[in-house]
Image (tube, rainbow, N blue to C red; front, side, top):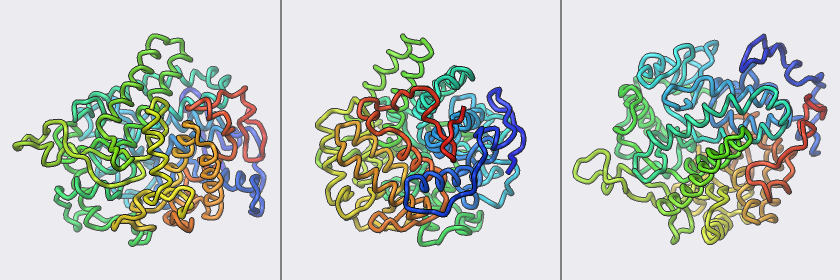
Length: 507
């Protein structure tokens, strides 16, 4: 399939064949072998490629999503480092002048009714003009977790020679630095240094029970004012309820009507996963700056990442639960006497979500905190190595747990991939190896499903899902031993680690 000719980041891309530098062989009959799993995962990524980026799912998510593209690039680096670079460059080219990287970059060839909220809802080129939204592409106005610097560093290490020849890091660095600056300045609603999210969609775990209390104060939008396109492709019992969806729409519309100005909304939450990914990307950005010879900047950023880890523990760690919790900055305590911005403290939300385990990826996490997180992950609430095949998105023992409904219990490949890295980083090699095997087994059995029942591994949502395939590839083709010593990716010995779908070098 020819994808047309496009110029991104100074590289002319004429076709899939030019990107892979190899002939694509027919997909073999699936077998339970590693080679077959690699081939099947590669076929998902080729099928979801649009020419400049990868859609999460052709049917349900037909545009480019921010943190999806970061995870997808991490897997693509093993097939085509060039395509992985283009994935990130396409996303970053839609960055706003204030530094935010939007959570959706819309494909103008996709009909408006194929996805909601669509470009005519967000109105980025008009409502986002004050915040510096680009005028030549339509985007959403909210953000998603900042995995991008980590992805850029891993992509660079897959083929340093290609990366340097294309000045990939030199061109990405100012955009990544502006992105982090936006989050650490404009989104510091609590005043303590952590970034806050202004919508559940920003944290990525959209429908988690962790949002129930903060969302309860939001008046839902009139359901007659919009049509849910997600129900065209997913069962209602797997998706957010109409009540929750109405609240999501209201929050997004109010943010748009404020012209995407930060600091005045009724929803502001410090989330442990979002901030852990920001800190991990700060560490990665420090490595990028060192690679570029910016050693003073790199040293300062590394120090800030370690300081932010301390702030994360101080603000969001709950030793009684052995878990990080969300902090609701607009709770009664945070609001004070009618002050919408509150006193900066708010209240911790007493819900156990998988996001509370994600800080395990941080290298400067205190040892007692890391030990407690592993204990919690392996306990009854998350079942790692026990009754659950994969770590669920929400507490297995809670009344709100649902093994099928979006982020209220199902297991997701990206969060389990992060936990595998975190376990390995903190010396839990046997548990990391067990989780890796389970992830690969479930990925193949489920057809790279969007998410799965944590007990059975039965697939839910979309099949052939982008990051599920990409992260399975990463687990297959990355050397896990290297991650024991290198928390942000094992330095590669040139492009030999990068394989096409036929196992050929992409050089």
